[in-house]
Length: 163
Image (cartoon, rainbow, N blue to C red):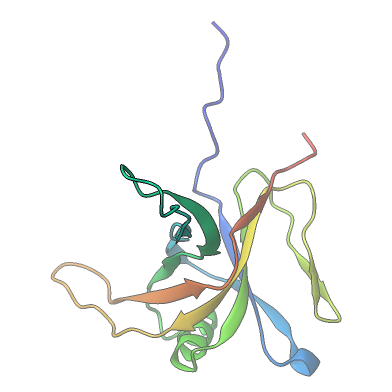
């Protein structure tokens, strides 16, 4: 029987964050992210029940409310990307996040405030506001942070097009 691939591993996933003022925009490849949760979007309900209705209220979907997620790290003060992430969260910065799936190894490029995502890797991208949190200390573990993200857009996935 042929070996059937059942999905994409999370190991090998990489995360980049675009941040900074327009004139000084930069993209930072995050080193040693231990988890990322994008949160689920929720559409609002707009009631559209007619006064004549005697049995059930009805509604239609309205705008999407982007989800709240988080980025987790085992905090390392010697890891400059951890310090950058914590500072951005402390400043409640608006950032763009680019998650490169493990089905490729190419990296995004930044040119004059525009990020280009190569087609030979699957990408999930979104904009978010970061919010800082206190470090966590638990027995027999590493000091960690869970940085909250309030997404400001849908999480859009562009699937790999090259085999």
